[in-house]
Image (cartoon, rainbow, N blue to C red; front, side, top):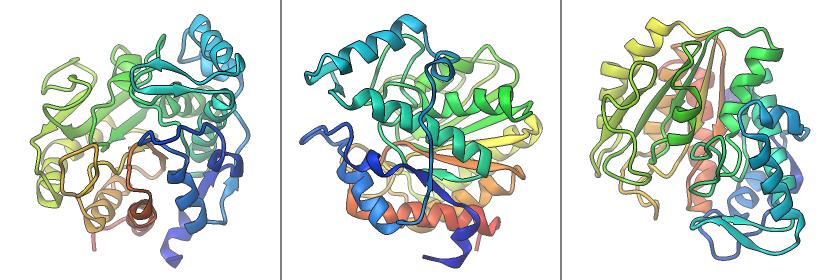
Length: 296
């Protein structure tokens, strides 16, 4: 492991590499099998409580997810999102690891992802909005006032935007492919709180970093957050089957460095990225960037 990354601990739980099996679905447990093999030393997180999930999600919806999982069958919560007998446990662990990452300034290596999850329904592989739960935990329990959430997943984080768009204490900023799933995230959408930076298919390191310097950095700097959370999706990487972007490891390293330069307290939560063999390199690059805090 690169020594620079040691300043950004990984956070997870060994059970997440086996829970919530999804078969041939692109959001498979193989993603965490690869990551935990590459980063065997990680902080073991506790699951979130139901009360902590309900800060961001409707109690009736939370109860529905639990009931679907505990019914013991594999079903689809929406056309894209699998729920099986161990999904409930995995979803609580994923949210709990995101919370622990916010406490430590770490990188939560978790699944299922979260940024499409709305207050009252599953969407796009996501059940509970991990980064949103972490943000509220930071505000309620860690003495954090203002939270910025930077989302560089290839897909717009519509669930995170919806949860926070009327909250002046949370700034949501998204760099994403446009037009693309889920169809939200146009420039100017959801004003005044969110900042959406849609980018055309085929955008790579240069386009991402130019947009970051021109739009993202001024917005987050003006907001002056006490904590910056990153929804770190790596499906914006070149060759990912669920995106059409061209970001490289060097690009993710530079994005991490720029993020670290905007706030003294940064934590990351895994979202997408669907080539398991490449995920460790992308995660290491982003961690290196955050730890270094400057674009090399």
